[in-house]
Image (tube, rainbow, N blue to C red):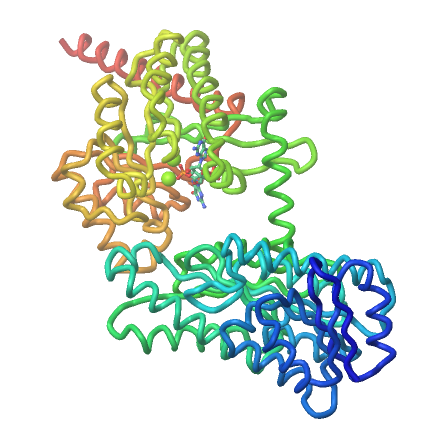
Amino acid sequence: MIKSRQIKGRQLVLVVDDQEINRDTLEIILENDYEILYAENGAQALDIIRSHLKDLSIVMLDLIMPVMDGFTVLKYMQSHEEMKKIPVIVLTADKSAELKALQMGAADFITKPFDMHEVILARVSRIIELSEGRQLISAAEYDSLTQLYNHNFFHEYANRLFLYHPELHFDAVSINVEQFHSVNALHGREFGDMILRSLGREIRQFLSLTPGIASRYEGDHFDIYCDRQENYKALLNRFQKKVNELSPGVNIYLRMGIRPWADGVEPVVMFDCSRAACNMVRGDFQNPLMIYDEILHKRELFDQKLLNDITAAVQERQFQVFYQPKYNIKEDPPRLSSAEALIRWKHPELGMTFPGDFVPLFEGKGLIGIVDSYVWDVAAKQIVDWQNRYHFILPISVNLSRTNLLDPTLIDRLKKLVTDHGLDFKNIKLEVTESAYTENASLVIDVVEQLRDLGFEIEMDDFGTGYSSLNMLSRLPIDVLKLDMVFIRNIETSETDRRLVKLILDMAKYLDVPVVAEGVETEGQLDLLRRANCDLVQGYYFSRPLPPEEFEKLIIREIEIDRTKEKEKEKEKEKEKDTE
Ligand code: C2E
Ligand code: MG
Ligand code: MG
């Protein structure tokens, strides 16, 4: 029997349930706020929905019913343009059915038996609000391109699954297209859209067999909240294969990050981690998949700590500048020619921390300028100090980060540094990594040229790790080439590496650019480099980076060599006089 209680002017709710007790309970819960229609099975429900298409605000739908079950109703409603707009709350005692209902388009679910009446009332009103608001602002629940949930709805649903279904141990999976902006730029937006659409379709197909939900989040970013997969690599391959099929001859690569389920971790946090993991394999075509694990988690905490502590570190002078010598091996014995300033962080809790741990992090956060200004200042003072105490002028090179080069105040700051300390421009050398030249070529070249015009010497750091070809060197504003240590590592054992180093050295000689070989650790490497006509050497063979008080011993040794040489010269002179 169908009861109807309509009071004009209020929102209309259709309650569909074959059990009278359930209909009565919902009546008690809803009657003060809503008009209610009732149906005992799916067929009756569809009749009512059909005749109330315009004024029905919500359907509360039991799943298991005689004549026609709730799934059939849902399916029918989803296929119908107008019915689809009416939100459905599923009523069920069967937890596993809820997810399926959500996947089929239900907006929410309420578990039977009905307890917490206020909660049910609140959820009904929220869903109605959401759906009305949605129709007003036309922010669709689904992304129109991929038919996956849009971001807001996805997170709402993921949260509900998390809160109401602790038994579901879902993983967070993020997928991204490498260099999607280039794909769009090269092949057009239509093509880009086609790729996203097909990826969306493949994800939906995957979710038709695996419990889970998915969303497209900003452009080319997809999030999937799903049952744990045995083999994520296979899943990524499946999506990649689909993309390949659609774009023969065009290289489009996907990458994937996964945050496996962990007890009590909310979806928002899970997806932050899966996205971070996905970003970590950006550009890594060999390993496009990363599973967020404890190590990564620790790394994130570590990074966060370093970021929090940077201000205190500068104030409390926890940063220390070490110096590593560069020796001129053309002379016998090799002579100290300059030093490179290398930063260390003596962290009060973490101990001695090396630049590999914080320089790229600070570069990424735009904070490296703080560290670098500190290093420049300390290095400039150091030159003056050694000059005063030993009458020894040791040029020092400092590393310039790529981000520094894009800072419009850089030139003025460096100029001020030199003049404030009464230095000669040529005694502060600037190391600029090769990759900086290739990334923002014209801008970087322009800045570097201005610095050179002022009198700074420019050393191209880590040469060989970027992409500049040898013949580009002649056009770049550089005074010294620092050959990256990867070339040196195997020169004793690899004929190819030896030849490569020789080739670079010959080319540099032809261009009249001196070369510093980095990372020289053994006598054998030194010999080979000497024979190949290399000018300068930096590496553990001569010395590790040292704190200033230890570095002074190297200066003292140089002064002694000078003295001995002078004495020898005087002796020679006297000998000549005697023979005259
Ligand atoms: P880099 O400029 O190429 O510096 C050379 C790195 O190689 C230093 O590492 C040095 O300790 C290491 N090294 C030197 N000789 C040898 C050797 O014989 N064998 C081996 N295995 N390694 C050797 P470090 O000090 O850890 O610095 C790493 C990188 O961090 C530097 O590479 C530089 O790019 C960056 N960095 C260091 N200090 C600063 C700084 O003050 N500012 C900025 N922006 N970057 C810095
Ligand atoms: Mg360097
Ligand atoms: Mg280097």
